[in-house]
Length: 437
RNA sequence: GCGGCCAUAGCUCAGUUGGUUAGAGCACCUGAUUGUGAUUCAGGGGGUCGCGGGUUCGAGUCCCGUUGGCCGCCCCA
Image (cartoon, rainbow, N blue to C red):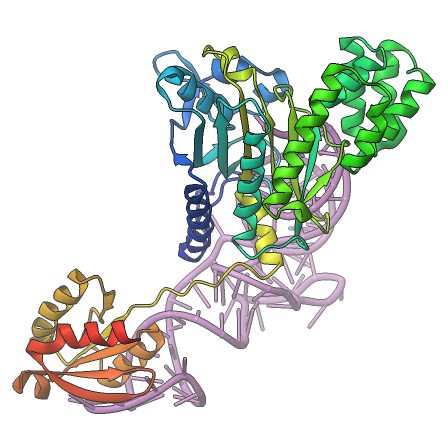
């Protein structure tokens, strides 16, 4: 038993674990690239103020933060959004619009561990800057969907809930509420799914009971699950803001439908997302069975770049966490088992043969083949067994007889057939074998 | 931050009302086997029973504390 334990909530990646993680990262990266997103990265350690600027005590309590040797207050990054806003903000005027960027990075939050949540995790982040219209949401939600379907997940496995903080705001405004009350109601809406009527307790304490007529309308609005129902509800109210917003909704849903993604999307105004910086459309991806935490979440945050010192720049983004996502893939049997097998395994008679084999081993490795051999002299029988167990396709046999005749014996480990080739032709024979198979 | 359950070999787990030197399977290593395949047989390494304290003639077993894990609550950028 090791004396030194891994820090709580941190993960170690043994080769099989890392193979799975690499698989996930590789497909995410491939998908984002196909959508025309460019990859970036940034420091793991940031000034604490970058996160304090936009958030309260709760968030600070969950930061890994400390004072460095130069007396700076620093924190391990808990998310990518402030960082990417700074990167983009600093060069906003020099970057071609729209700015479509993604990253795959590690984040740290000092939280209690749970299923699908640790203190150290990876996220795929994708953001579009400089596009104020719902075209940006279309592109991002399409990317989100494909980041999941590329692993074999279907609409049976997950869905994306789509909502809109602006629409809520305009609607409550039209019902005659002022801004503090609107925020109070949105807080209740956020919790309504979980707590039912209890969710309004906080509002009542602060502002007194919500007018029964308004509350009924809020509850009805919250349960809206289609664009048609939305339009019907809002038709009576009219107003430029609401009419304009409905046009955005039609454009967004129409775009996603044209991309063939309608089956993944559910209008659900019950989603508000607690995070204060979201300003418009918000969306979250969940597994259909409802057993896991959210797979991904995102939305529009048009004010954040400016708040962090950059120019006014509209923005939309989302993130997928690797922990819940990997759990889902494993539950659905979509996480492949990775075997680490060489292409070629060398069977070597003894010291003298070993020297001859080394030259060929180096040649084949330089050609890009993965070649292994036993480090110590081992009886032939064991070596053949090792060759078979290694998963290699070919065994190369270097015995005294072969060396004497300047040949190498090649054994096809699948068919168990053997032949000898002149040592000089080994490289091309191996290449032909692998290019044919 | 709060609550429930749990902790014995690398893994999965036994371990009697508290009683000799803590076990099995799998995995790993060696040999049988000096040129041909997952078998078989024989052998081997590996444990301060999470850690610390207490009760006892005696603790893997009972009690307290602590650390860590799983699950839920809060939160979830």
